Length: 324
Figure 1 (spheres, one colour):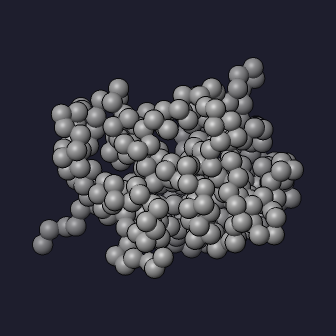
Figure 2 (figure 1 turned 180 degrees about the vertical axis):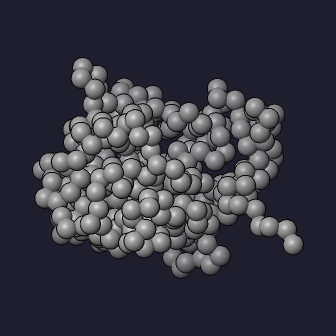
Figure 3 (figure 1 turned 45 degrees about the vertical axis):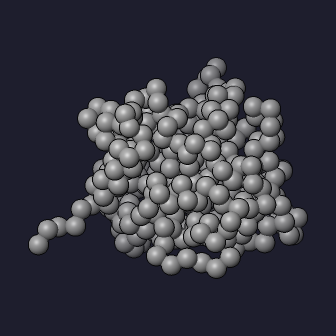
């Protein structure tokens, strides 16, 4: 009996087939069917968002493209393909936000008011205006998408109580983790985060039996930094009443759920449940599958990019469709 291919291997097969059918003769870069030349990375995006992505990423200060934006398994590209079309559809985005947060949202607000000469209701590689996490290097501004904690996507909305809510999104596709971070960077990590990661000065519960070094394993390290970014933005920005993190990943990527930090395994066997349990306000971290998060698109005629998404990422959709 043949072993079932891993999630990563299956996605490489699916994306290779899609690239071969849709991106020839540009596919096959570096001998992989699911890669295109770096200079052709825009072909990795849905045709309907290519110009918008170029405007958004090219405006100053520029947003950095990830190194493998020409790769069929790029999480950054996957995130853009699903979310960037919402940037021009604030009412549809409001309905989607209600679906993923269970909030009652009255309206979407521009997360960036005048980037590339227009408002954006969704943006990407968001780092905020203030260096809350002590990551900037002296004399040099932080870069969006490189060497600073950034949300893969971000949006801002007002709920029916009149509160402004910031939603930061962390997007995963085929990632999986195991080894600890390179210990050579731990001294810098401690210097930056030791005094801002735990209550009363951060999101981790004051009496959680955990030390900072136990979070120096992915995906915990990324989740911690995202949660600190949300917590300190809420605490320090008078325009934000609440900030939360929405973590999205495919349901089939079970390896992503492994508790990679030995010191955290006593709390459970699912990384996202364990991380949530460490927070002073667990409701500020939402973990959801991509399939569940985007199921409503199947019933929303206004989601005109759904057919393209379904064709490009056929395994990222639930078996059952939800009513409108």
